[in-house]
Image (cartoon, rainbow, N blue to C red):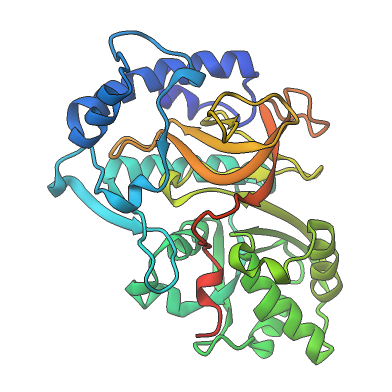
Length: 358
C-alpha cells in the first residue's frame, strides 16, 4: 500500500494487522531514502547495525530520540527545497527542535490532519473561534508548535475569530457577537489546554460570566507540562468548559512538532487513537524492550508522513500505556492508549505554557 492509497480510506478503518502491513511497506522504503539522503541518520543506522536491505516490522524500526532534533539539523532533501522550518516550543534558554519541511511534506501533513479531524466534526467548514490571540499570525517569532497548530487548524473554519486581544485579555464583546451571529450553526473551538484554562475558563469564572453556545465542538492540545500544579482532570476540565461555554463536545488530541499532521485524537470514551497514518509502541525505560498492554512506559510514535526529514519513528519523553486494539467501544480500529505525562527529569516543554505571563 502507498501513502496515496491511505489517503483514500477512512482514517480509522484499518485493523492493527492490516495497518502493520501497510505501514511496513511504506516505512521500509522511507527509511532507505532517509539513509541515502541524511548523513546524520545514516550514521545512526550504522551505529545500530541496522540493515536497510532487509524488510523490517514496525517494532524493529530504529527510533530517533526526540531530543536529537534539538541537537542536529536533520533533513533528507536539499536545503533549497525547504519551504518551512517549524520549531518546538521552549522556555527561554532551552534548545528547540527544528523540523524542515518541503512542499510535499506540507501538503501531506495538511491533508492528513484534515482527514483525521474532519472524521470527528464533518467535512464542512464551521465558524471557528480560536481561543488565542491573532498575534500568532503576525509575530513570526511565535511560529512554533503553537503557531503551526493555530494556522493548521484554521483550514477547518470560516469567519475565523480570535477570543483574546493583543494583550491576552479575553474579549467578551467579540465572543458574544460571534456566538450571536452563528447561533444556528455548529461552532468549532480550538486552543491550547493551558491557555483555554488560564485565559478563558478561569477568567469567565472570576467574572461570573457564562455563554450558552447551543452546539459546539472543541479541540484542545498541548497539555499542562510545567504547569502541572494547576492541572485538573479531563473530566473536570470538560465539565467547567461546559459550565462556561454551553453545549460543547470537548476532545483532546496529542501530537508532536516532530511529526506534524500525524495527530492522536481522543474519542468520546477518553481514549487516544492511532489513525491509519500512525502507530504507537510503549517501551520500558530500563532497556527499551516493548511493554505489555496496560504497562506504563515511554511512548514511541510512528508516522508515515515525515519525508523531508527522518522523523518517522521517534522516542518521546512522554509516559503512557496502550489500553487495547481494534476493540474500543467507539468503533475506531487500531490501537488506543492513555498518556500519563512527561517522564521525570525530562526537559520541560509545552506548546501552550510558553505564553505563561512573562
